[in-house]
Length: 123
Length: 123
DNA sequence: GACAAGTGATTACAGATGTAATCTAATATC
DNA sequence: GATATTAGATTACATCTGTAATCACTTGTC
View 1 (cartoon, rainbow over the protein chains, first blue to last red):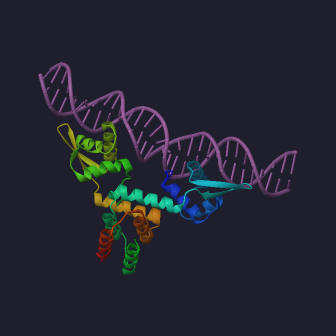
View 2 (cartoon, rainbow over the protein chains, first blue to last red; view 1 turned 180 degrees about the horizontal axis):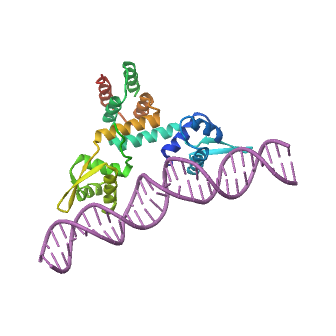
View 3 (cartoon, rainbow over the protein chains, first blue to last red; view 1 turned 120 degrees about the horizontal axis):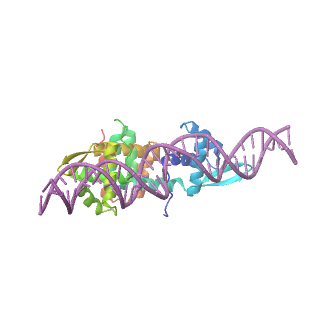
């Protein structure tokens, strides 16, 4: 898997919106992000422009609206980010990572069963 | 849990060394990091100074050597980082996170069994 | 006491990031 | 065709981060 561009936390929020619903206009993304952030539209448009420059987003012009779409698959990004996190914080080891997550989160018996099923699915 | 200072990836490498063996002198940390990085001693000392200013490290002077020690417990940092990762990448959901990790990593049957035991330990 | 050596503090610089305004150009409306 | 409006590009600024040199001060040695 070739190198992904480095995407900051703020840029990730933008990407998440585009992954969820694309193609999307800037205004659409601005509206969506205004529900969860206090960013000004100009800020969001800066992040969009940076993501385009980084090769994470593409766009197609329609009239005077740009329709943005992802150039990185969400799955690819998520897997890369997960690998990076596991290596950086746990030295690549799954066991302490899972132990820490399990301690952090309030999990029900159903949750635990579901997680075990996920483990069992592993071939 | 009060706010932890934001620690960069490079600073995390320094912290890991101090967590592993402390108190530690700058030279000791420089030696240890020289095994895995190509940083100059001045670089490492900058990172040490920044960590002190951030409140992540403290020091005690002995002769002309500073003995650095952590002001943040590794466990606390690891838990906070894990929470942040889970929320940021998976919206707080354990199941897709575990599924992604399991797909990413080459796990043996023993590994899987051990991970299930970790889940079962959850009260 | 003087000088050398060693230690960290401060400074330096470039790029990244967070945040947002200003400018330019294109489209929509009249 | 002219003007208003809108959309993104560019610029702005402060802080963070990566990387490392220079400076200042303290300690060690003679």
